[in-house]
Structure formats: structure tokens, C-alpha cells
Amino acid sequence: MQRQQPTTLFDSHPYLRQTLDLVADKWVVAALYILSHGTKRYGELQREIGDISQRMLTRTLRDLERNGLVDRKVYPVVPPMVEYSLTPLGQTLNQVLKCLCDWSTANFAAVEAARSRYDKIG
Image (cartoon, rainbow, N blue to C red; front, side):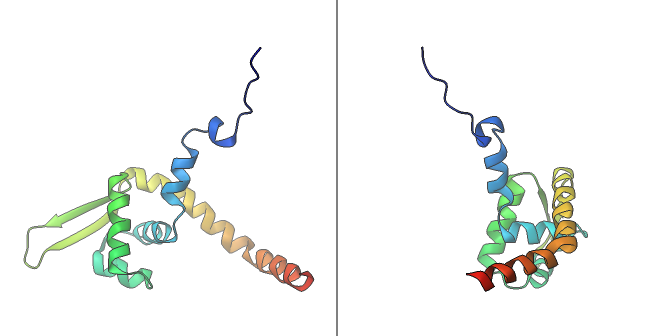
């Protein structure tokens, strides 16, 4: 009789690892948060995010577009004008990220207190 391998979290939720890979990046979360407030041009996104290189912002936006979370609209003007906005799918993910932001607002003082207690011990 063959022994059955134990089921891991990732086995029981086959898309979880891919979803975590998709959103477990600070630039992704920052871009989605900013776009949750409306359509933005590239320069606006870069200014609002702050400490992000042009290369990283471009890569982040391309990944978000590839995954169907962000829509990129190019206007045929000179110089070129490009706007980014959340797709309906991106808006559904943003609801989840809003819960994370709400949790951080409500609980981060407790996290900092726990860090302080731990650092005093260690």
C-alpha cells in the first residue's frame, strides 16, 4: 500500500502561490493603491510612489497590465500621452488590499509595541 503524501497549503489552494507572487511586491501594492484613486499618467504615478526608478515602475506597470489588473491607454498625440487605470479585475483585488491597509491602520501600533518588547528581550 502506497503512503499518501501530506497535503500542503499550496496543494490545497493551487493558485495561492501565484497570487502571492503577483501581489507580494511593494511597488505593485503602491501602484494599485494610487490607481484606486483614479486614472493616472506615468509621471503622476512616479511622483506619488516616490522612491521608484523609471525602470522598476515600467516593469511593474507592464506586469500589472499583463495580469489584467491595469489598463494602459495610449493617446495619439505628440508627445505621447499614456494613462493607467484599474481594470474591473484590478478593482476587485484593490478591495482586498484595502482590507490590508485598514488592518495596518488599526493594528500597527500593536505591531510596533510587540517589536519593542521583543527587541528589549533579545
